[in-house]
Length: 116
Image 1 (cartoon, rainbow, N blue to C red):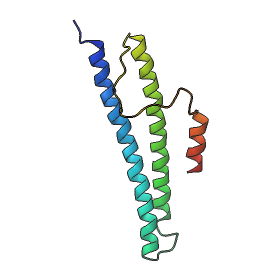
Image 2 (cartoon, one colour; image 1 turned 135 degrees about the horizontal axis):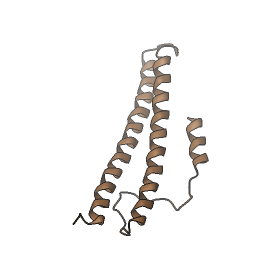
Image 3 (cartoon, rainbow, N blue to C red; image 1 turned 45 degrees about the horizontal axis):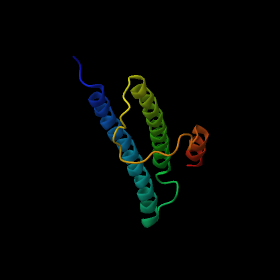
Image 4 (tube, helix red, strand yellow; image 1 turned 135 degrees about the vertical axis):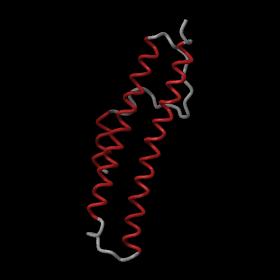
């Protein structure tokens, strides 16, 4: 006989939350790196062209992290559907409350991403 579905689902949920937090932490670190790079350039009086390509690459990395985060959110929603389909009705323990269904639309996220 296999493991209880609830325990298996909780194990996956724990990894999911850890992965979501890791992506968020990477975004924070990258954003802080950008801020530090900009401050450092000003602190030592360098032209805006110095490090411009590096800054552009960091912006690309931030955009990729944003895409990864959106994919994780979508995957989270898919796993929630799977959980219900296999008959697990227990709420998996997370760290934060979720906004109401439909509170954010993909277009809203894309608009924020383009603004950055």
